[in-house]
Image (cartoon, rainbow, N blue to C red; front, top):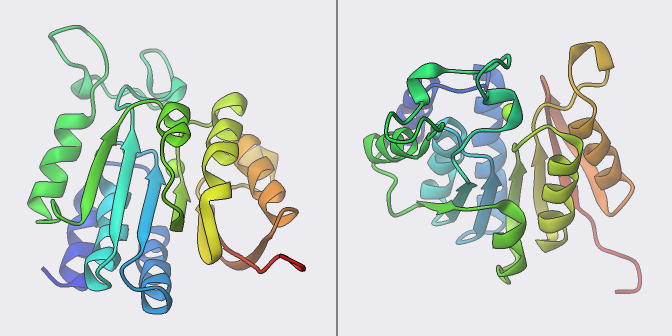
Length: 213
Ligand code: MG
């Protein structure tokens, strides 16, 4: 499938990514891939694979690889009784949320199994044993304060100079959404990343050279 076909498929996948923000993921992926072909990318928060196809479309076109990391048990806001609970994602075997089978079906349908590589486990544990630097990082995991900050602190230092950091669910107005993604976005701006673009709640930044390093 070409980039346009993959973007069309991504729009049909279950998830929390408006079409214009998804298109921005592909566009900025293509931009990074053009500047740094063959790169290593990682997304934190995979759910059913929607953003993995948007980014994967760009990765495949630029010989890059996307690690798609998730524990696949859903975030706090996805559990029973919360706002984003989906009972069809519960595994009858143990009654727990499990998005991994849906993620696998999505990546297979997109024919991206050699481009988008699933990593299943806690973000901080994986990060502690992951020494590869990143050309692109997309933070779209849990929104609880400790979770969002742990994702930022674990993974943002791995982004190379000239590499891209994308953060989802950043809302300037607290009335529109939770604070932690906004807080880590501001932390990134204060710690070596410059703004590149903003589409909806998606923020795109790039790591600038550190003076004297
Ligand atoms: Mg999100």
